[in-house]
Length: 330
Length: 115
Image (cartoon, rainbow over all chains, first blue to last red; front, side):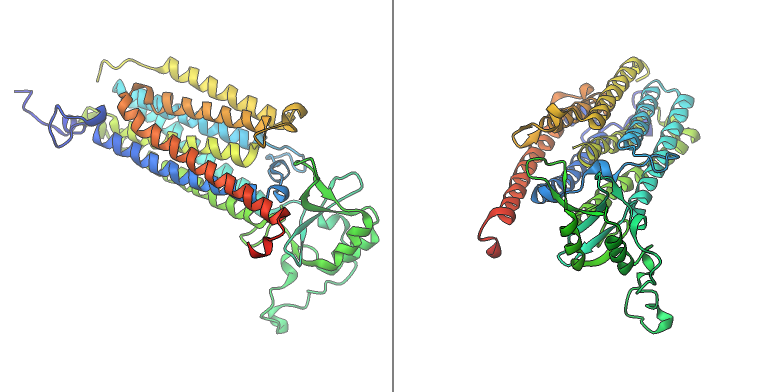
C-alpha cells in the first residue's frame, strides 16, 4: 500500500519518465539550477574578459587598484589597501559555509538547525551587500580629485616626494570661483555649474602656479615599470595647465578621478551585477528560510530546495572570488 | 535520505583551506615581493600567475566541496565543468590577445590613423 502512495515528497526527485529514469543521476531541479549557473558563469566570464580586454588595450594607462581601493572603516586617511575586500571575501566565504551547513542539516532532516544556519547565511549576505555599498560610496566620493585635459586624459597631483595631493591641498581658495555665477537663478540654465566640485578650475590653476612643490602625475606608466606612473617636471607641469578642462572629483559613468574612463564603468557594472546577484540570493534565502520555519520541507520529507538555493548562493561566492582577484589583486 | 552521513568535518576543513588561501593572497598583494612583482612569464608577472592559480584552486574547492560536485556522477560533473572551462579559456585567450594587439597598434604602429 505504502509503495503506491505518491506524495509531494517522493515526486520531487522524479522526472516525468518514471521512477527509474534519472538522467546523469541528478533530479530535474538540481540539474536545471546547475545549467543556469553554467550559463550565468559564462555571462560573468564575458564581463571579466571584457575587463581584461580593456585593461590589455590600455595596459600603460590603467589605474593602480591599490591606490583606488584603500579605505577601511574607522581608519580615516589611513592607506589600507586590500584589507577591506579581504574582509568582504571572508564574510561571503563564511556565509557559504553556513549555507552548506544548512544543506547538511537538511540531509539529516533537522529543521531547527537548517533554520538557524539559513538565518546566519541571510545575515552574512546582508552584511556583504552593505559592505559593497560602502565600497561604492568611497569610490563615488573619491579622495584626491584630478583634472581632465582636452584630450580626455586624467591628471593627478603629487608633491616632490611623489605623495598624492588632494585638490583642496593646493588650490588657491582666496580667488573667487569663476563658476560661482553659473546657476539657474542667474539665467545660465544650460551650463552645468561648477558648484559640483569643491574647488574651481581657476583656483586649481592659481594654486598650481603658487606652490612650486606641486607636480602632475599622468595616467601613463614609466618605461620598464608597469607599476609606476610618470610624474612630470615642474616646467612640464605648468605647461600642461593650459590643457585643463574639467575638475574631476570621485567617479561617475562619464569620468572618474582614478584614470581611464572605462575603469569606473567596468567597476560599476561588474561589481553591480554581482551585488545584484547577492541581493537576489538573499531574497531567495529569505523565502526558503520561511518555508523551513513553516515546515514545508518537513511535509515533503526532503530539503532539496535548500540544496538548490544553496547552489546559487555558492555560485555568488564563486563569482566574488574571481572579481576579487581580477579587480583588486591582479 | 535519513541515513545521509554528516559532512561537517569536511566543510570546516574546506573553510580553513579557503581562508588560508585568501590570507596568502592578501599578504602577497600587500607585500608584493619584487622578485615576483617585476618579473614576467608570458607577459604576466609571476605574482599575477600565483593569484590566478590560487583563485582557480579556491574555485575548485567551492565547486567540489560546497556545491558538492564531488558527490555527483562524473557524467553530470563533466557536462557542467567542461563547457565552462573550455569556453572561458577560449574566450579569455582570444580577447586578451586582441586587446594586446590593439594596444600595440595604438601605441607603436604608424598606420593607427587607419585602424
